[in-house]
Length: 557
Image (cartoon, rainbow, N blue to C red; front, side, top):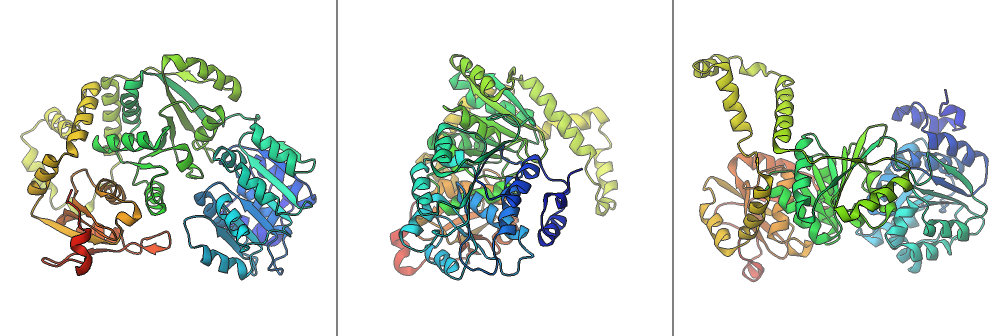
């Protein structure tokens, strides 16, 4: 059996391996680590997301740099802020035993001066996104003229995002004799051009079949009309009660629309797209990682770098234009040895594209029939029964059990179960088409002046009013702030109300029962290096500055 020790890692890194609980190297680690430790070589490694690529290039780089030399020796370029931070954290963990090691992440959306100060104090390794790195090179805040190792991680994703010119400009500032290590899930023409132009006779390693998808993924597709896509999505989600999924849409508008529909229908969903501020993106991703959100509705660009191992499903609301894009999407499930499902909703006219995907990925996509409401309901009941059977009994209830038994003793078993089912599934819809039409109608009415006025009048008196230090300057309006609060706090549609958004701050109300939840959830919450502050307002008082309050005040929603 191959072990990390047999790969040639030194004692310090082996301690990190042991502490992390790594037992045997993955295939990409087994093939890449010994090669990079023993040879000064360029490398092109094709491997799917989730196969352990960070450790594959991270351990060799850490072992080969001189930790006593404070100059930058290693550069790792990744497509997004999220992936940049993840790589930095993992590399720092791997190199915990190297006392003088300093790894600095530089990315957009954070203070550039602070990042420059960290670089100036000495950083043997820089992990960067292309846009921010190019900017800092232009300002002479970063010097990569003498690096010895350069990694392009998720190279195909960076090129799909339009970073081709940025990467070319960055690589022109690096020495010709450095070792370049390129890691990618696929090998589109642009990646091949980068490899030929900036690498010298690179060693090639392919894990699995070139451009293939993970063997742990079950690829499925449904044929639906364009108008029935949302019904199909809701059916798939309802059929899988434990689903934890990314849903990909083509446009920002559709992403937001689908998320709002799901939220309106009672699902734990949130949208992530390019119109959100970095603060909003961070909040959504934090909620998703903590599984407060079950469905993340995303555009391809906004989803770059999302790295969550437990995603059960990837759902393609529409088929992407490029097969490589489908590969990136589906690669977010079936990771770390777990099974995953990738689903596509297509129209009849798009069926030929399924054959193209099968030929490209060398795998079979299975056609699925849309489940009936009765099938979905039966599946929900089975899940509900299993949940009840696996529930831990609270010992504190023993004293109250006789009272409950006495209150229900006149009911026979069948009647009691029937009542429980009716209460649990009273909102279940046996006619999804009608419900979808109704959801759209209600969505339009929800924004009307009349309904907003009625909600304000009918808001419960037994409520708490809160101040939060985010507002219109953070790209929030009343609807996006309400959706964020509901998702972050895991509350129902009507549990957050009377949301008012000003320029620099906002107010919102909840039922008094949620006071402790609200205050505790926002304790020590930091987004984009800024503390999010939530306070309970006092009756008759406001936290708004007197000079700006009237001017900034907007109509209550």
